[in-house]
Length: 261
Ligand SMILES: NC(=O)c1ccc[n+]([C@@H]2O[C@H](COP(=O)([O-])OP(=O)(O)OC[C@H]3O[C@@H](n4cnc5c(N)ncnc54)[C@H](O)[C@@H]3O)[C@@H](O)[C@H]2O)c1
Image (cartoon, rainbow, N blue to C red; front, side):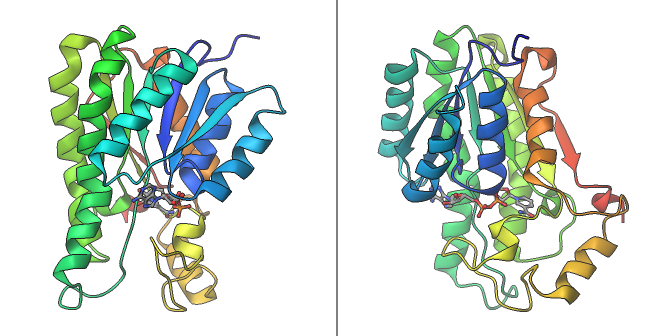
């Protein structure tokens, strides 16, 4: 059976873990060649080590999404390794879960750099490569925080602006045949909200390991379960495939109805 992404090459930031990893695995199973661009090389190699023996084609490139020169190197690597670039997924993200007054200016700047400015640089850097392939698809990852303004301030601000970026890029690249859409996930069970990683620190009060925190998130999800990376990946697959060839500038909530509460 033909894959829904046969012949496509996808570059996925944050592809070593969680939502990006889910996209890397699903996109690969649907025929895409996948470049995982991340700072966590060991985790990425584990994912690649499972995709390739299963018949997929995946490769890793070291990328700190805050670094413009590394972006150009990642795009060059993708074109050289797989002969082009058709899909860019800006998934890498960070958060610091403290109150408005407690967030330092440096922490604020870093959140904006990783969650927002990196996606802007990524779109700008990948744009010519996508156009060379006849036009492609960009997917940005927003958040429930894009529409509900609770939570930590830098994060909410960055994810709200992702919507503006998505619409701006959609208009800017339309004449080149490149589309740009966003997904706003709700509460997705990944290391981002379960573990204690340098890019996403959690203590007992914020971690899913805490039953109270888990139940609070569940209670705010009308469809009655937290999301999985696969829930987000299936929506991403559609938006990045030719099935969505007339969809651009859209923001799709994949949150079990959480934004409705
Ligand atoms: N998990 C959730 O509940 C949830 C909800 C809404 C939105 N999101 C968003 O989804 C995206 C992915 O989150 P996740 O849940 O998969 O988290 P995750 O922690 O599982 O994965 C995030 C990945 O981003 C990478 N990363 C972080 N900073 C980076 C940098 N500077 N350069 C390159 N890579 C970097 C990490 O190494 C990691 O592999 C983030 O943008 C996050 O804000 C997550």
